[in-house]
Length: 185
Length: 185
DNA sequence: AATGCTATGTAGCGCATGCTACAGAAGGTG
DNA sequence: CACCTTCTGTAGCATGCGCTACATAGCATT
Image (spheres, rainbow over the protein chains, first blue to last red):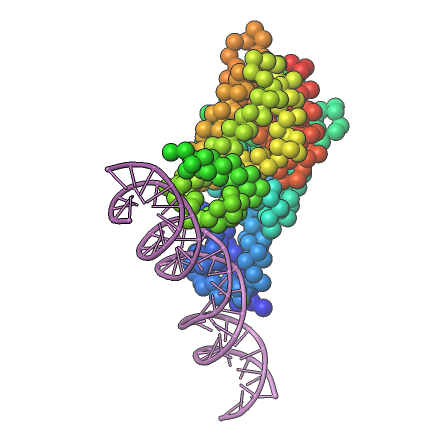
């Protein structure tokens, strides 16, 4: 129960690093094994198959990202639309989170084609994001946060998209305009 | 000069269909050849290598998409932010354009990892989008369309993203809120 | 010491990929 | 007709992939 699980956990942690670095397309069993300091043979001993391995590793990555988000904006803190957008963008748009966002984009592209396990994992992560935003948005007297938080989600994903394809300036410009627009309401 | 080019053009057209259907990840030389009614051997006679073939085919897909956009909103027509957003979303968010948007997402994911030819093509397409929006947005007295059009671009990409990962309702909700917010300005 | 379960290395299978070598067909030109 | 360039089919190479068969090493229990 212990040795096997300990090595399994260690492998997951290192594979998460590797996955963030090379992306889904570059994550072969052999390369993952090398990154984890083991062999492909052992990975298939720890995990049922590659899909299982990827699902577990992606969950680990998602957990790390959640921790980073909570670190930047602790649970309980609520901000109005414009300010929350600025805060979120400052976090997920930072270069240090770029590997996460690249992977997120790749995952979404896979999910859009209903590829497994991309679809399931992406759905879970998106649910997490959605809940995170709803728990941090301050809608004032308006009691329904669904609309504004959906908009914020869309805006942030759009900013990430622009950044990802190399148009950081467009993303920053859009972020500026979005916060301004949200404030003049 | 003529027979070869005619067959080449025909191949490009059919390969564009196939590429839209299966995506970059599913587009092998052999499957592309089958879709085009020829052999991989001939594809590599028509094109320098797979990258060349993909670049040309993607350009063709992009041209088709541009035509579809111009069809939905002819050149010369200008709309204020909110209305333009609604019009664009009604177009690119329609199920008939879904294959294009899935491919676009996949291309962006590849571009984010600087994979060729994804990077170059995605940059060109994004430039086209950007110009298209700037030429259709009506900023009123405000003479600088860069800010609002960047925001519109980001919002639309975000809506596409949400839709792509299976959250159409979130996308529609966000679109509603975005147009409402843009109008109350 | 014998037995049996856990862990791991070695080797390789079958398949798909991008791409190439070679040979031959087709067809215009001298 | 002979020849030469353009085209196209056949076969295959080298690589990387996910995954498996088999054998063995280590350790624990009887």
